[in-house]
Length: 167
Image (cartoon, rainbow, N blue to C red; front, side):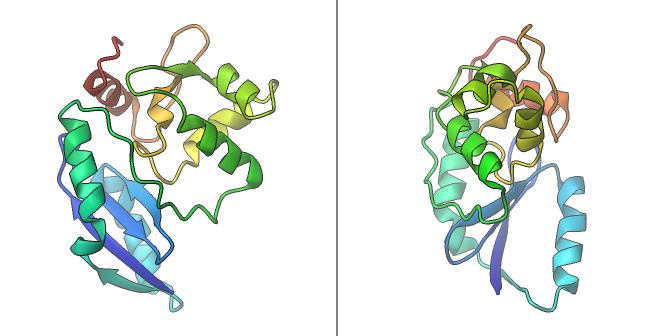
């Protein structure tokens, strides 16, 4: 399988993005979290890693606009074949959270069809392969606390501030 990749400089650090021929399948930052991912991919004989900046020009432009504070509808060219059905439902629902707004884990669970599955929603957020594009940073606790974030709470705060959310 061919897996294309690029790196993108951003105000929150260098971002790694990968895609298959079907669409984007992985976004990661900061750099320390994706170096192990690349190392593991390079050892997989079934994957051919190809650096190709042209295949990511739309993403690069969208992220530049996003980090300048503009509301962006990221192109939905996603390849999410690795997620469970429940995770995919949560990720699809997360994409409906408007720019500059937050929703609770409980709200997300209810919308995804499992009103008592707030913890499972949290796990789906943690497994999100496309942070920012699928905005798991917009999901917070019922009491207004930030909850968790794979890149750390300071990064979650930065993303929410970019969107004008007071945290």
